[in-house]
Length: 362
Ligand SMILES: C[S@@+](CC[C@H](N)C(=O)[O-])C[C@H]1O[C@@H](n2cnc3c(N)ncnc32)[C@H](O)[C@@H]1O
Image (tube, rainbow, N blue to C red; front, side, top):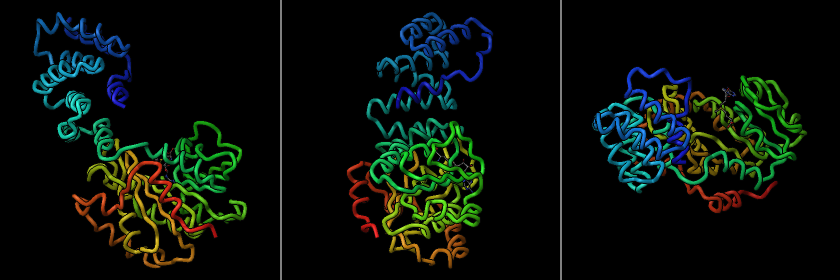
């Protein structure tokens, strides 16, 4: 993970602008060497410049990053610490210094530096590192893949298909329906996978979904569409009606990182929206459900079972419940996020223990 995150900062987006000064030329050459994994050569290339201009922040940053890649943490700490002291408003410097602290096991400093970086700008890698400190274990995508292998669902519904990556996790024996008003499939869907280009509300209103599932109920569902809780709530209501008590409904983005990345209107690259509100309301209004949040990076995975397809509690009070939870401020989670979201361990043994506690198939 470490290496990927650092790399992401250097991936060239457009051809480099021509150097304006000899110092710029040295820095560009060193960046190029860094991108080619020639870390020692990058360090050597910056030697003359840093002897002449010891306070050249960008050169210190590049050299510190090369040291970090070579796991020379002390040297990395010195160079990156100086770069940050010289340019405290540069999130890349703060972030790579955070990575150095992380590599040395100092999570407190790592968190402090990442928070400083995201206060300056929308700096996705720092949000991601913070999320990987808050949560742990395999990411939601790997856990979803395990769910498919373990449950071997006959039927699967996915809300929010995007490029089809998660839909493709469904095995060849699973009849899978994917719903997305703007699917951007990278490859054609599999022979047993069907994509509907419409909103989930329209899909449930306009189709005989059980018919489309060959007369069977939903075994497994994954809600990953619009990042506002009232949409996910309607998806949940619609899917529960088509389920059995032992069916499993998974909901992405239930464990927000912070208030900024949990806003209803997206203002950060890393974004969960306010899906967390759905977990809170399900726990209050549907104590009959088993409502868990698996602590998967980057933003948690809700897992609901003990479903009751006959229940009308949520749909009967829909408007009142939405109004009630829109008024709940993010600060309610302060210091109680894990407790209120019922966030449990993210290891496969614990997850299968929960799955095995479901009611027997009726
Ligand atoms: C985060 S992406 C889904 C990613 C996908 N599940 C994956 O992991 O590969 C969210 C998708 O939800 C879709 N979406 C937005 N509003 C929706 C709605 N009302 N009903 C269904 N899908 C919706 C968007 O078009 C977008 O493609």
